[in-house]
Image 1 (tube, helix red, strand yellow):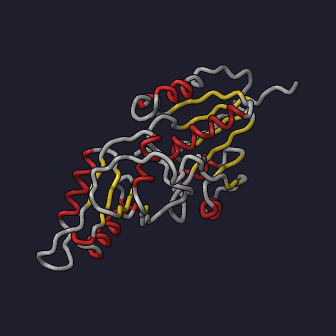
Image 2: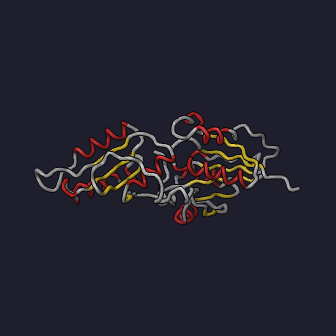
Image 3: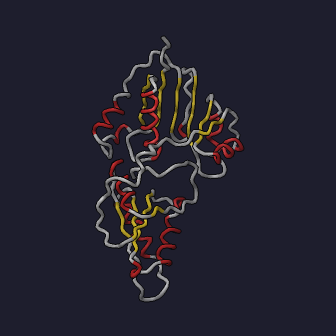
Length: 267
């Protein structure tokens, strides 16, 4: 009987980041395929933020698994923290970056790995041109396509308008939230029966967003702004899916996106 491959999977698993969602799904794939997996969770202190107790219990059950042999080390997180583990027979780093080159400090360490996995065809070129010479593989992000179905329960929203745009993002300039808000406030009026719903992580982000909007002018003096609603709390996976179903169009004019697939962040 063939012995199972032993894998150490390091990254984030519990919080609302898209890579945490991907790692949760990757862990399930490896487990169902019969691999023996231990995880090193860089966000172990965030277990109680968003996930249901059953998911937390399943993920945390892999934290103390014993690996009889060091077969594969799979690091799935930001490139600045990647460190090769020479005690493992095979070392794989999976990471991403959104601009036309990676930080210079990443290259040497990534070249210590046996392979580097990237999330997009764009990153195959940018990592290679930045000096990563070990084999590069295109491995898109992991997500559950069946979960993102328009059919199913919706989130009850206290929004009276007939058409709702939805945007979900961290409050970072590269997400293009400034371009989104400027375009929305210039294009629509209060009377248009339309709304923009923005999902951010916390009250601090909400306050910054409201301050930014207060500095934007409307096209004509005296006209009322179209409504912008803000959700400023973390949401679990099921509620995020219900939120998508409750809106009519998703908008995100991002300035940099190296990954692929639908936005499944819990932010």
